[in-house]
Image (cartoon, rainbow, N blue to C red):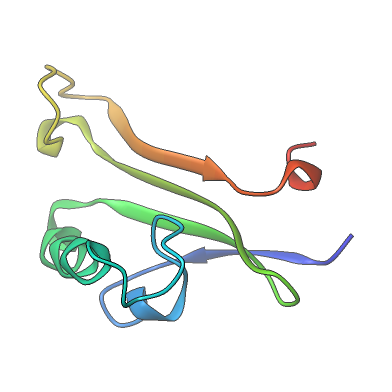
Length: 93
């Protein structure tokens, strides 16, 4: 198995890694999502990418403090997971 690295994305590197597993940055929704995240980083969202040098991004998770969630829940004091995805079965172990 390839070595994996957990990447913390930030406003300055959000375009360096696959975002929400869009195929490429030309797909509709990619740029608006990236720009939206960049504007929200001050509120504490985390967007982490599990990265393989040979395969690129293989998994992602996006989470945020509950008081800033944009879901219709009262989650103050908790972390809210907005998105979690693992593209490859072999990395689920």
